[in-house]
Picture 1 (cartoon, rainbow, N blue to C red):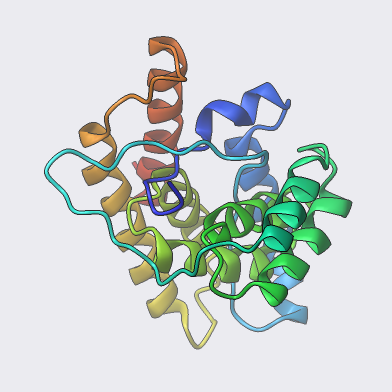
Picture 2 (picture 1 turned 180 degrees about the vertical axis):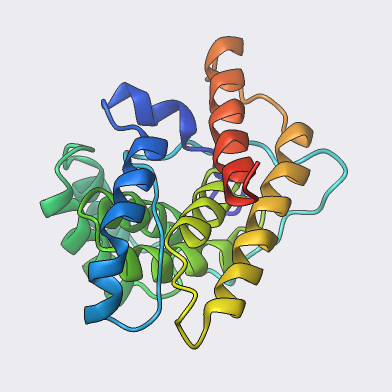
Length: 212
């Protein structure tokens, strides 16, 4: 389901993409980007995300959606056919899908794709924008929460006018990821090892966002 907690971590390594390493690259290149673009910062994983069950004891936060039309389903299948590591094709495809279907149930997949794609391309401000839209839809998306917390913290420019706001968001996202991750239930399509690796990956990013 589109509004279930998204948990993409297990796929990052499958496509040879390390969100932690990419986040570090984003942090290193951030000062130059901040001179060109106003306040923003961050990093994220890549590849088509999996969906996890909602954390135990919580109620899914449903984003407004409309039933997909046959054309939307066709367009979504065309998007899925694009190789997960082909960010130069997946980014415009996801952006176009969101413009065409602004209330689609597939929005989380598109935002997750944009986060991972823009992180891979080191376009931090765009990555943050997509990440915050995904969190608005899925507040328990732990890989995105962890990645956002880590990236916002590592690309912080103390001289930026919104430095305090960025630091506050980094702390908020990181703490949320740490709170939610242990409550997640394993989806049937994941092995225990994949599930544990995904959770550890999200927690590593979250703790990094808190400087731990």
